[in-house]
Image (tube, rainbow, N blue to C red; front, side, top):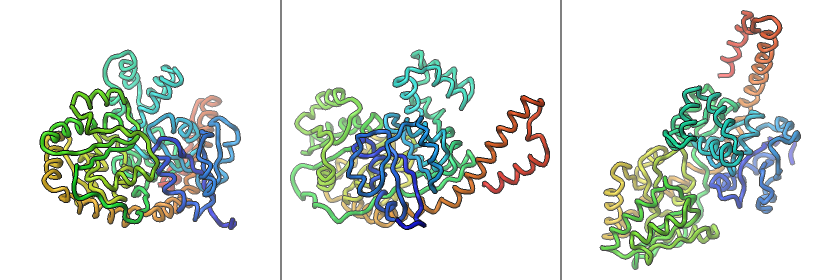
Length: 435
């Protein structure tokens, strides 16, 4: 290993974890490993050992003293998503050791609520964190939710997303959507918006030109993926055209979905396939006439699923909201949330009349992927943060020293060290340099 190669500590869920951020890391890892000495950190000892062919892997406990040496690397990068099963331990380390935040979403409230309330049984800790970040009124509202009242958890996640908590603990940030960028910029943290990385593969199997229409939905499918609306639209289409609809991945409530399929009279049209090998999923996407990738409400996330669809050159339908609204109009079919049913009918009826009507959108999506989402570009941008992070690291260390001096002076003499004009002037210059 050349001595001048950068050293990167990279915290992320890893396969076989059922997390799209694990796939994000694996899509980016070859380009990073080609340019830097990578060490991947996971709290799951069941990671795929094949990953060690590309990078070193360390299994960690968030409270272990060995993590004190993290800062010896040139960069420490934390991938933060909204599923506490995969990101709770990463959050605990980030809050102790500042680094580069990769903010995959805008709101992390669901993750924090699940971690504190469901996993730890620590309602008071959850309420204390809410008050520390957002004040007493927020605490009262969250207590009302915990006691079975309003607002709902979804409403709380919009009001109190907790992205401020992670941004304030970071030296710099990377994000993939405008919403997240604006939220982090508001905290005065340097943030860089990058296109999600995904290497465009060779052209895949061509979809059939005749027979039943083939529809696909895949991924980690919760209520926001609009499956109920899709099933209702397909029930209406059934009267006019033949089709098959296959659902791949993980459902938030498989029994409820099966009940919905029965109510819609679609038992002979819909198949729940669950998780399948990656190659089988890619082949199914490539053969499909349309992939459903609806999201509403969106929590400010970008979609690795959309990149996978583009890679197959398959047409897809998305909701005109958040990151999806900003996608090039000639690469996806966009429908408005308030006209979801009518616009789904319009899309499906158009396909029933001419299954080639949206083919050009899929091909242009693939061109867009190859042009703007190359992993090599993303990797170069990550490595380019080293100088900024080194400056920020020194700035944060000095701020922490001043904060301790404030506390000591207040206890000993009844005034804060920052009341001294020369020190305050230096802090202003330091803040300006940091920005």
